[in-house]
Length: 216
Image (tube, one colour):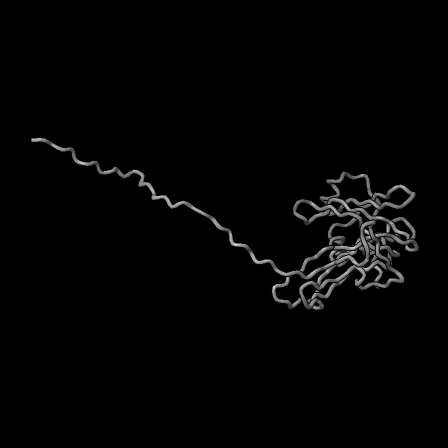
């Protein structure tokens, strides 16, 4: 696996608005048992990097003035209202020799071919525990394996190395719970609308009056 490195600087005594005008975004690196480290990152460089990262990727921060590298995961990214410029980034330093818990996304691939079938995604992510470097990028589910209504994929059927990765289950969960299910498409019920037929009244048209009887 490619080792992803990213150069950052320690925060200078500049106002946040001034940093952003210079194409710099503020950031923080949190580390267990220590104070957080205030950082500056290049806006464009980080956006370019982030486009190729999966959600549980490990990035090795190279902090100017610090020896060595800091393995981190990205906890939070805040953008402006247009989604183009960074407002703030939060990094979390991880210990590569200690297991952590993280959510791994479910990704559907290929297509199923079942008449009147509808795929229901029961879970869009699954929590697992593993060493940071062993966290799966994603769980892929091949829809083409679903051949009939009622077919499903269980959590226990997800593809991962069980010697390195384990599922994290809530008290009310079990490994045989469904992740996706193929169900029968429900026919749309026609809505019955009853209306009273009323002869429209002609607005603005004067009704013809009967001519009065005139006696000679």
